[in-house]
Amino acid sequence: SADHKLLSGVLDFSRKSIRHVMTPIAKAFSISADALFDYETLEAIMESGYSRIPVHDGPDRNIDYLLVVKHLALLSPEDRTPIRTILQFYGKPVQRMFDDTTLDKALNQFKRAGHSNLALVQRVNNDGPGDPFYETVGIVTLEDVIEELIMDE
Ligand code: ATP
Ligand code: ATP
Image (tube, rainbow, N blue to C red; front, side):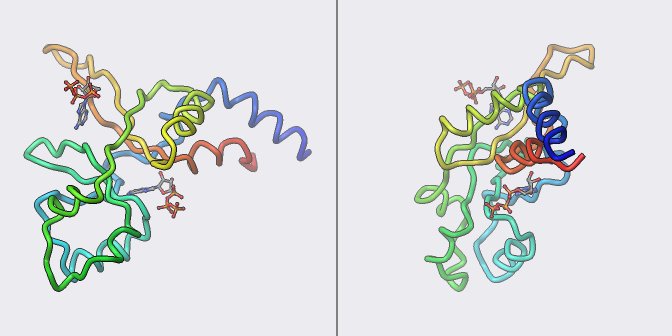
């Protein structure tokens, strides 16, 4: 029944972690801070259909900022402005959450953080012989979290 579905969604909410609802980092659409905002970049962004784009930087492809697509409306692709320059005006620092964060905690963090409804998901990588390190494994949005609540399953 519908009641049963909603109830099980609510119960899962405090048990399930964001690892199970995130988009894996390999599937994330991101752009380089070194890229230029030209027609080609604009087309790629529009084709992706996403409204928040993580920006990666350097050989390690570290992600520290998001581009919010609607901010680009004020810029002309003819100017070929470097993404790095755009970040200085419009970049939003990206939030991070650990992969074992439960959905209820993630919802609270999104609420506290205000408008940036996308977070990087990181985990502690203990797999190799070396020191443990933080690894970014995915992105999670408010939509991924909320969808679990009303999931038809
Ligand atoms: P909005 O609905 O606010 O326009 P959106 O459609 O860009 O945003 P969401 O609705 O937050 O994105 O998320 C929809 C799905 O797309 C989620 O599963 C989310 O993880 C995924 N997603 C969001 N942004 C990206 C991105 N840049 N790259 C890959 N997947 C993304
Ligand atoms: P600082 O060392 O100046 O405090 P930081 O870059 O480590 O800054 P934090 O917010 O402290 O930022 O990072 C939380 C955790 O996320 C850190 O332990 C770090 O290893 C990891 N981390 C930091 N920056 C990135 C990044 N760009 N991509 C993936 N993981 C990161």
